[in-house]
Length: 429
Image (cartoon, rainbow, N blue to C red; front, side, top):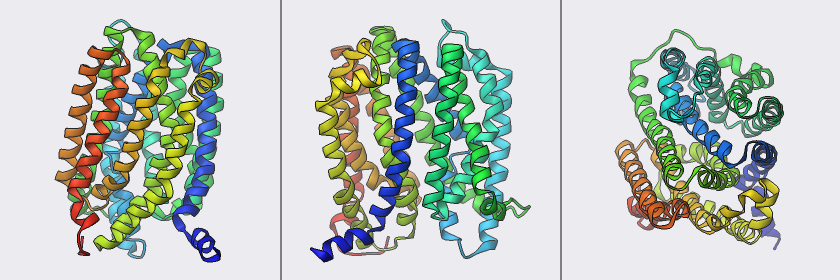
């Protein structure tokens, strides 16, 4: 029994998970309070419109950083002891992001009507939102580069503390803006919060970040290497939000804005607990997988993750399902009770999503470009086509059924691709 507790005590994954859990709990609590305020003041329709803005903002921010976050994390982890190579990687990354961010900001500011029609449709006029995004985007880009450096250096505690402080400040801004300006205020809160996060990051970690100030040491070889990471990340961070917007708009057109709001509400609940796993995968698993050279070590890491994390989520999902009515009332209001039927399919889909993402991060860690691109395109295609079919057949509930079907399919793909590493003899990878 003593040796069992010693293993738990010395388990790095559990240590990171425990500290990460504190950060995620704070982020979840702030998100829950923010969600409650928005639900009470703006209702399901306002929640649906905010979902569209969040999705397109995710894409815009990813394009602004060229999707280089995971690539920077990998190379910072690889070149911790090689300062010259590290400077070359970072300086190249800074230059590429600067060029793209400035160009994208100009497009957003000069042609906001195009973006408004793309995201909200011609029935809504929120051009000013995209001008705000144009101004805030450079701040977000710099902040993401800073966080990638911190993450790549395995500064888990600093990374999580930054997220905690940013979450609390973001909550205060959101409450004030929604209370004062309602929907327009909610839009601006979404835009402002990432820019505020940069100020917090620099203030709390300025001594560490000074070491990574860019130089003129640009390396062509890293433009090519980073470009593969950029393409891989941009595919998921631009295609998925675009598909979610199309699905949400399809629900609005066929079922109504309230029904789209119910689906957005379940997405928000899912987003709260998925924060834990995605943060853990990024700050712990990605750098770890990048260092692994043997298939046996890869299998051990995946099994460790499954044994440690999946049972926790399985129990959590069962609790959420049986407490769904209470959760709806706490997070939203009685107006949202129609979303109750979405919980089962969303929970099942998220379970398979977690199981598949744990394996899929190897595609990023080992820069398996074509495998990543093809599997993402297949997954997004299945999600969209099945969603349209299921919504047509079962109403807005069909969107959550499609979510489940898609991640069962994606998990199956991951097992097939990595079958030799997971089930075969030990080999180099």
